[in-house]
Length: 140
Image (cartoon, rainbow, N blue to C red; front, side):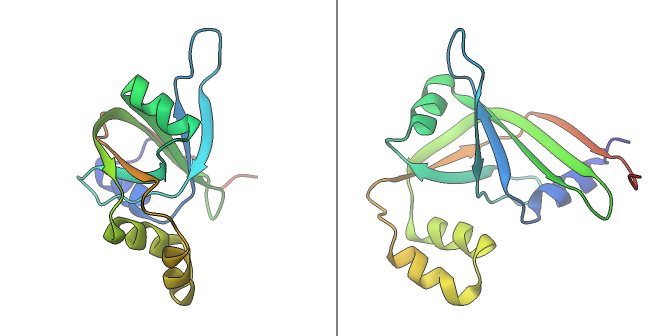
């Protein structure tokens, strides 16, 4: 069953590792990589990456990407979202701290942030435009 708008947005706002996919050129399958991200219901999805990475170059060229988050238990559920990049720019200390704080234990965030090079990081923001979602209920 597809999730309601509120349920899919709430699920996307939970902490999941996302699979990001972006067009990678004629004759190639999309580039698909795991990313940490941040999202609040009704807002934009943001994630950061090295600005010189292959992923960053492809997203800048395509101008859009998709993300998939999923869980296997207690029921299999997923949300897939696709949309345009609405903004990109140098990552701020606040963005790095916020996104890493979603995934790391509180006592590890400061060290991770201090060990990161803000001069090479870029944050991409995507406005969700197309959604797919489902909760398949208990499997097995």
